[in-house]
Image (cartoon, rainbow, N blue to C red; front, side):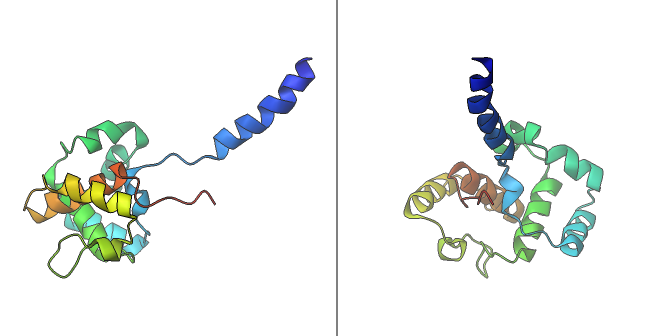
Length: 140
C-alpha cells in the first residue's frame, strides 16, 4: 500500500519542484552589461539588489515602499530591456507590452494611481503588470 502512495506522490512532488516561483522582475530579459550599468548609475551594489529582489521581499515590493534609487534602477532596466513597455514619452504602451484584454484593463486601472515621477511611474508599471499576471511566464 505504501508503494502505491509513492507512485502517486512522487510525480506530484516532481511537478511542484519544477514550477517556477514568480517575481515581478521575471519580466526582464537580462543583458549583464546593461544590468550592471543600471545598478552603477543608481548606486546599488549587486548584494543590495539581490537582497531586495528576493521572493521573500515580494510584499515589500508590491507595497511600493521602495527607495527611489531602486525604482530608478527598474526604470533603467525597462528602458534597456529588449521587450519595450514604455513609449518615447516614457509612458506605458499596452500595444508594445502585448497584453491580453484582461491584463490591459487591470494594468490601466492600477496605473490611474501612478505618480508622474518617472522612476515611480516605471516601478508601478512593473508592479501593476505583475498583479495583472502579465506577462504569462512560460513553464519551459
